Length: 346
Image (tube, rainbow, N blue to C red; front, side, top):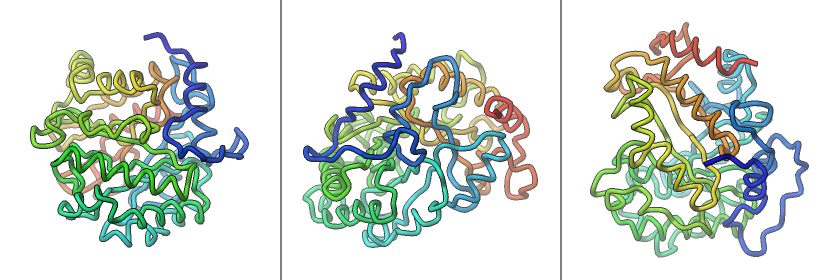
């Protein structure tokens, strides 16, 4: 498929899924905090991030501007996007009670991406009530909070990784997941018509008991989604060669597979989390994975809304961090750090 930047711009400017009576954003196209304004800028295939591509990271070790800035300074290029999360203790804390999510990034001059669950952690039994609209007021409150905190025009990764077995909102019942997502989307948009909704899967595998074994069975529908995305790590399976990387990308639940699904639905694409995973089946640092991912971003730049590297050092579970040579909690991953810096520095 040959990229057509003008088509990408047209699609973004008419992002599907806003409430019927939604007002158009009045931010200028140069507003770095406006997701819609930034997505409307053309990005040419062959380079990433280039002048207008949105690249960034989650905050580690703290979900705040300082941690994101530390990473961006180390790589030698400012970050245009910061990826963060809400508290998910209960519905109160994950909606109107999560102002800290925005306040910790109040001084971040870029697009904010918020990963937001559909039910609290461990709240699997609440999904059917959510599907019936029981918690709609909470979602209206979250839309109001985004506006109050000055981040109405931000991305929300709503109910992300529903095909991952540890998520409380995982698609054990496909119909309930879809109905819950739709209620949350409609309620948020009723108080914040500028919100950009990102539907994201976990790459490489969907268990047979989730979404009927295929992640896209849980797709809520074009009217409820603005961006389709994937969280893509170098594990299960890892990619020892470029041919392995390409084969994994092409298979069901892979990068290319979901990108084609997004394009078929007229949506932009995102990679909200990605990284090496030396403590998984790779068993080692894999700098080539960084290079192959970057090349993929460059090839798909006209339709890539954003990408965010995922920093984490969590014992033997996750050691995806790069550019942290003096952190005793983190593996050095020196090869990946060097390659990443060489590709992203200005």
